[in-house]
Image (cartoon, rainbow, N blue to C red; front, side, top):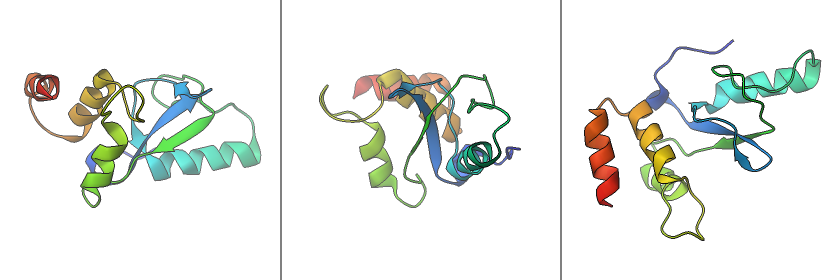
Length: 113
């Protein structure tokens, strides 16, 4: 079971399969890790996104925005093509999911970088 708490309240994660994003959803890290551990211990089903059913094999945790903002942005923003991070589309999705701001304003701010 997954919670219905706001995404901005705790550390988030994204799901990966073979090193690539499984889907565009973000989840509370603790919720996904709890479910992943349960599936690995008890079986019965494969690891899948609870929102779109996309398969995954890795949980990629992001630092909590509220308590570790510098680490959060370092993890998601790419400085150049060789650095780790998320594609611009995924950064926009993430900010839209956790910040209660106008979507067009987020697009504009991210595109200006």
